[in-house]
Image 1: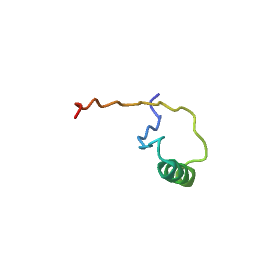
Image 2: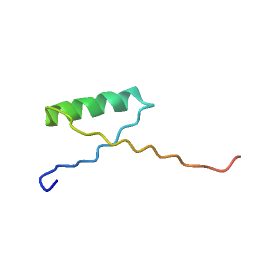
Image 3: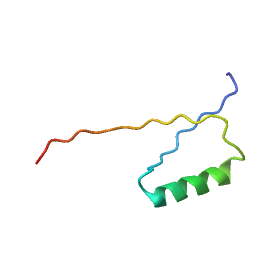
Image 4: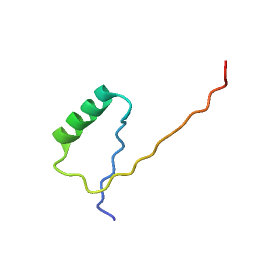
Length: 48
């Protein structure tokens, strides 16, 4: 898609504040969402 617009926007689904901020920023900038790519990352830390 040569005219496609892709933007990365951080969102922490474990944080209600993050969800509210994301929604407000998205609604202020865009009228609709056509495609959503979710990428969940996991970081393993040593015990102790």
